[in-house]
Image (cartoon, rainbow, N blue to C red):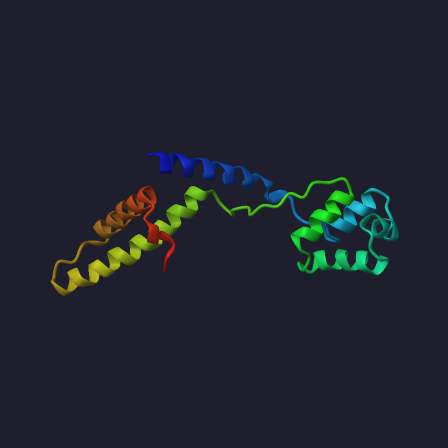
Length: 151
């Protein structure tokens, strides 16, 4: 029960982020865009970061190429009076992700069993097979066994 409560707290934290998907990196990158919005030149940014102009420009390029580190971004953000917000944003609600995975596992398990039943001439109808898969998926999603995410 406590494990479920904790999982629900984690899930709600991530589900809040789904609405923030509309926040996307500007075409020129966050650093250059913010610098320009502030009316700051590249040499002025370089001076704030205690870097050469070429190093500051390189940081802007590195951001666009996804090669900048979080440490570097945090440093730039701080020098520009900003906070760095870092997040992994799920593409859909966590509960849906867990259910999808449980369905995949349930299908594998039920189809494996169905093969054996066919060999013994005890094959289930398609309708019963689908209900069994849904039941097994719900059980897996609820119990969250340790091997849920193992292939």
